[in-house]
Length: 298
Image 1: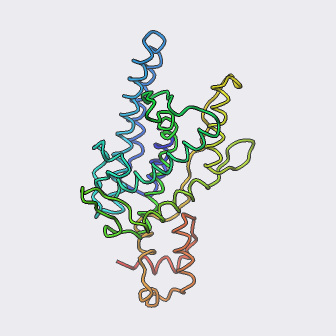
Image 2 (image 1 turned 180 degrees about the vertical axis):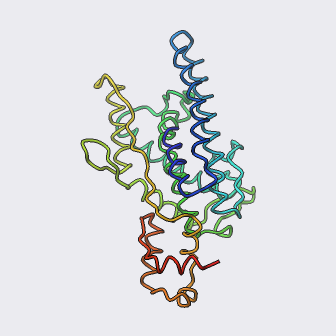
Image 3 (image 1 turned 45 degrees about the vertical axis):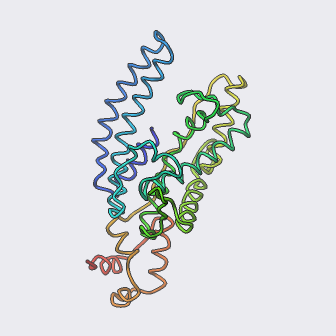
């Protein structure tokens, strides 16, 4: 859950609803519970320790999801996201609303990527560590997925921020399940690929994409399982959100029409450059003169 909380910390720079100080206090309290689990694990049945750890994970996940829900509803209140309380929501074809449909589709893509890499390094995805061992399921995939699930959450946040999708872009089935239309699916896939290919300092002072980082971690994990390595620890660089505008200003810029641009006296190419960089998640430079014009928009 470390990287999920890191995403909230980065998001708190742009969303007032995310009180990162309060979140850290809650997380620290839960960490004390985790410490007790680790201290008592040597003197109790392993299944009991796993159950206790999953309780800890569930509590942290609750903190994370509460704040993630607030972010989603701040960006797109019309989707009225209430969370992922219904187990059927977690299935790719059973989403009850637009946000769950986006998350399910994204998690399915992540799951497929992890399954492919697990196969390539020779691990058995039917044998997990935290999720239930079941030959008909893929518990190891679920275990690894928890380490990278936040990448999908980030991709959905970024997609919603662009204000490109509306309710009519989704498909409602005869069973009242919500699915992604073709255009929305394409946009989400592009966001996920962009985030998977974002490079971060990983090892030896060199930058690698998250896709390579995921693959390398699993390769090292495979070496540990096969006893080629004596020790192993997942090494996943923390995300950085390179932004310098708040949500309100971002929305003003992205929603600025050609007519409004002309009235404000902003050059067409200048506005295109700013909008394009915002959509790609890049840091933008706005001259004070242009910024003051945009801020006059109500």
